Length: 321
Image (cartoon, rainbow, N blue to C red; front, side, top):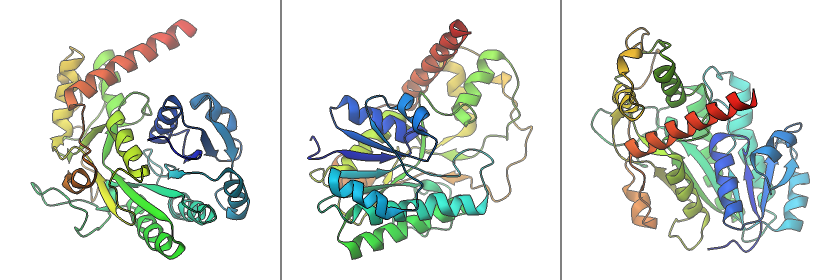
């Protein structure tokens, strides 16, 4: 249903946040896009039609004044640090994944009736026992600073929101992929290697992951932001496919949809990373029971759509060059 006020989205220059903001705009919502200082231009290009507001992530009083005037119906925190490979620095992880959402939540406290949706991560769990889907009540033992920071944010947002009287929901996303994903991420890397024939060094690919197409993830976030969807304030929900597919199986499937050969991929040329979990597969039954949400796009179809989009982007860039 349409929101009764504007919708605030942070992280619009990122993969999920940008897609969420564009979907809201297509649906006729007024979107306020929060960006770091100096990021207004790329944000305007990423989400045309949004009102761009630069915010440093710290001064919640300035943002609270904006919210008091705008009276947003929903605030989505899709901003994060540490998603890209190599972004493992401790302080940026803590500032981007804990300080930022807490300041955003405090700013939202001055807008009565505002709903707050925090985008969490499957890496909060750390990993699970092979063959057993991770449920929201399972122990969370993150293996990285990123996962630890995201888990801390989930816990603080839930408790602080209860104290402040804010309806907050945490959507714990699993392995989201789709058109527009950053080039250094796994799926775009595999597509590029399969098409160019340039071998990319990979592990043996035995890691089981829970892959979710971008459009399905956005549908889930919209359900979390809708007070009539059944998503209960104060709860954490797994947003996932509940299907285990290894990285190697993913590569084989991509080879089929791109009509190439997975022999082009350099399986086994890299060791597994230290402490890398071999099983991160979620149980989505709790979110389904609350909202009726289930993924609509199967993995093979989603990979085909992603590969087609990547091919179109490369062709556009070639023409522009």
